[in-house]
Length: 288
Image 1 (cartoon, rainbow, N blue to C red):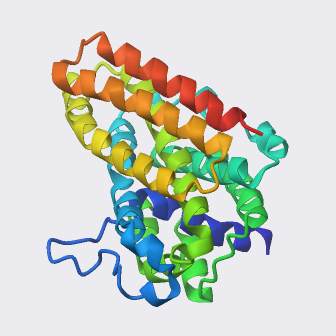
Image 2 (cartoon, rainbow, N blue to C red):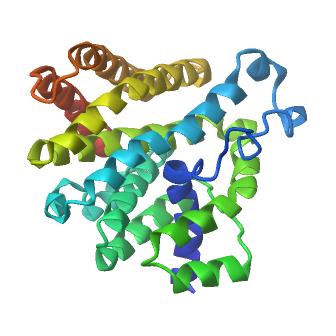
């Protein structure tokens, strides 16, 4: 029963990284930003919150793809880079819990891509515990849960299962009271994805993979800009934790601009970016 509930939570966490896997050029699998607008405050609609949230959800996959590409080099896996499961009891505020639901979700994604399935279960439990505490309770049918349970080592199947649950997740995220929570979860996921990526790429000897990832950093700049805009809109009244998070994201964006302008795999600007990501990541996993 415990594992069954854990698998349910894992759908949400994996979704934040791979939800757009089935989206096509016709946009039929993109978020329908009008379907639940009647439930959303008109002020939020005018500020473009739904569109920004849609963008953040769909395009989180781009940072997940970095991990996917790097996982082809099994020697790059490093469990020491993961957020410690021992920290699970340290997160007290709902915002800290939301950020680290995202961080543990990114860790889970990293673990699955590197086929470290035995390690994944303790991260599933951490993610479930925090998710329960911030009110993330998703309902999936028995067939989907059983299918997930029977295919935990089949990444493509897991992605397909998550995609089929997309509409249910969307309705949850459309709850106006949960916009900030959803944004914090995605922020935690993105920061952890970048932390894991930059630490792994530093050890990689594959210049082609490095070029691929460095060329993809331009998209991350746009992603961070959107995330910052979303957090600023939703941070009313002003909360110190969110302000610190936004400041850290803005600093990362500054470094991303320098890296994109340089665009070489041996650029010293990469070190500065890595340091900025590391600083914000320490804040995310260390916040109470």
